[in-house]
Amino acid sequence: MGGQARLDVEAALRHFSGCPYLGPHVPHYERPMVEMSEDHYRSLVRAVVFQQLSGVVANAIFNRFLALFPGEGFPTPDLVAEIDIEQMRSVGLSRQKAAYIHDLSAKVLDGSLGLTRLDDLDDDAVRAEITQVKGFGVWSADMFLIFAICRPDVWPSGDLGVRKGLAKLLGRDDMPAAETTEFAERWRPHRSAAAWYMWRIFEDKTFEPASPVKSS
Image (cartoon, rainbow, N blue to C red; front, side, top):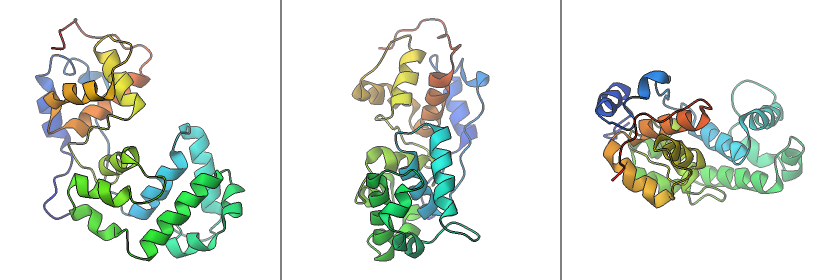
């Protein structure tokens, strides 16, 4: 993967152990689990399907999408490009998402999105590559950076779960994205793992903040 760093869970846990905000909670959750994607095209198609949907609904649509392509393995961009939008809508995709998947496939096929070079680019360059595709904003690029190519220091400030998780950690109702970014500087260069714990805290209905600490 060129000279780009990958998420190091052990190093992140050592870093968090000295943090009075996050450190006390880390032992209560599973460790961050991410691994390098073997098919970046699949990861990006899946990201489109899952946008703004619950996991259960998105999984069902994703599986119906796969059923459009009998055979082994994930369909290649040329096969997906041959499926028209109405066929994709028949499995539960919106017209907009179907158009996004077509645009992604077209850009992979014409080389304007070079999937094989993403592993070697820095984070900002990966974002620039991915956000040229219709329907892919910074959030989608950040999810790809964390979950597909395991970058260690991504802070997805636009993610609702991350913002809400950090607010819960601090005993607050909500936090603006910019404020979460400033606060998360204390977790650099392991902010991807920190985001993982924010998602776990957000989902934890029984969560209680540790002893109150000032956030200044």
